Amino acid sequence: MVHDSDLIIIGVSVGLALGILIASLVFFGIRWYKNHAHLQQCANECSLTTLPIHINGLETSTDFSGSLANSMTVQQPGKPRKSSQFFWWNHHSKDRFTSAPGILRYSYKDIQKATQNFTTILGQGSFGPVYKAVMPAGAVAVKVLASNSKQGEREFQTEVSLLGRLHHRNLVNLLGYCVDKGQHILIYEFMGNGSLSNLLYNEEELVLGWEERLQIALDISHGIEYLHEGAVPPVIHRDLKSANILLDQSMRAKVADFGLSKEEAYDGRNSSLKGTYGYIDPAYVTTNKLTTKSDIYSFGIVIFELITAIHPHQNLMEYISLAAMSRDGVDEILDKKLGEECNIEEVRELAAIAHKCLQKSQRKRPSIGEVSQAIAKIKQRRLVKEDSISFASRDCSRAASRIKDQNVELSKMTSVKESN
Image (tube, rainbow, N blue to C red; front, top):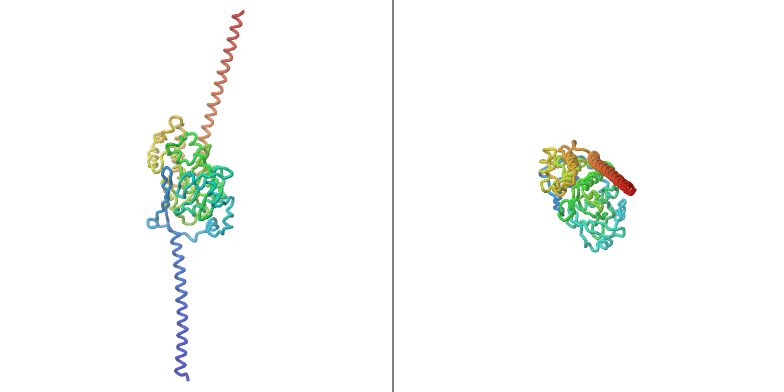
């Protein structure tokens, strides 16, 4: 027979076993819930959409980030593919970081010496101040990440990763970088004539002639063409503006500042809206769909800046809309500094190209290759015309010289006859 004491022992044992089982289930359930909640929170943070607006004055650029999460709902796609460049950066060791392809790494002491302790400032941007420095190979520009820059470190990562493999005569060349003593510094080739923005809007700067402006537009198009059609995978600049176009001593233009750039191959994942107010593609804002045609829109704005010297913050789009009402409407908004020297037909042709770039539908905008060819044709016609004028001028000069020689000969003959 089973005694009462045995029943009590059996009951206690079963109770303990059930208690342990229940406690284990509760423990693992709580751990699963916390992990799931953490993953959900990360997903929500990744899907948060922000719009950094770089508001450029005539000399400076400031970065403000405003959340659009409450005003826009963006669907989170499937598990995003991890960009190789950010995976490499975020998991680097000190030695691995040094292996950034094609880019030299400098110590903070080297940079401090080259800039004479950061004394000669060239400009100020959302990334931070830019200084002039002298290296053994010559003058360079040194861009220092500001301590309060919100987006700066990610932009720094992108810049080094992309420019380590992108090289073209119309892209500013990254010569080196420095990650030392808590500082993030980029070293570029020195561009003697500064930014296009400063040349267009600073009254003290020299005035750009029409031929120079046409060449600048062509140079920019070649730089973007390399990014869109020459780079593998294609690169979307995403912050094309006059402040990011730099000019060398020969007034040849190069595209700069790739901190917000994005490789099109990684565009399957949701991307926060980035760019500069006045240059951002409206279709990109409404759809959050980033394509190379977003750069085309920004380039259209830059072309109109070259034509009008009106900044996007000074209601440039309103002037453009008014000018579009007639074929010669652009004549009314042409930069007065150009005077009589520019060819008005060339101005109208370039404006027509810019209008196509600003089409509301991304699909209707031309590719950068088409834009580049159209600008090149304007340039070629100018050169042919100049050659024709020069040829005609040489012919006239030769004819005048022959007439002069003939007159001299006639004079000699007359003198001989009179002496006889």
